[in-house]
Image 1 (cartoon, rainbow, N blue to C red):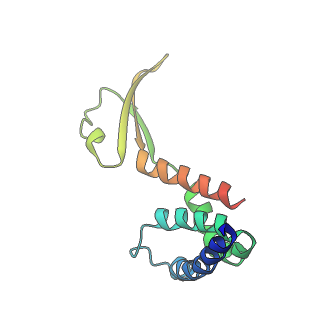
Image 2 (cartoon, rainbow, N blue to C red):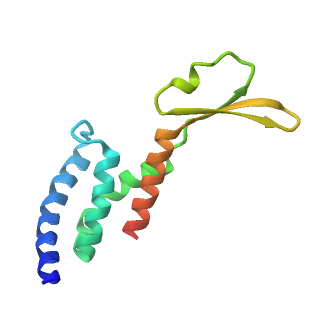
Length: 127
């Protein structure tokens, strides 16, 4: 019985991936958040197994671009008046003491970092 259910999912997954590939190949990213679409593609790959290979040329370039994207990180002196930096959406700021350099403020785009991690996981799932 479980084998029959997987067969149904594979058929549905093929239809879903045809739509996802069309979106990915069109460059239109305002229909659905790209990170969510790519994560869904990774889950579909697990169901489709070998039948998924035909969709990989549409999916993998997007995953690789996201996973290798330069992370938005900055390091400034902690005494600089950038108190609003921590409040910016998607960013977190940390003050650290660096030997020989004093107090520094590190600002990281945590939203981007999560998207990179999600893309790396999806690449792993595609392997």
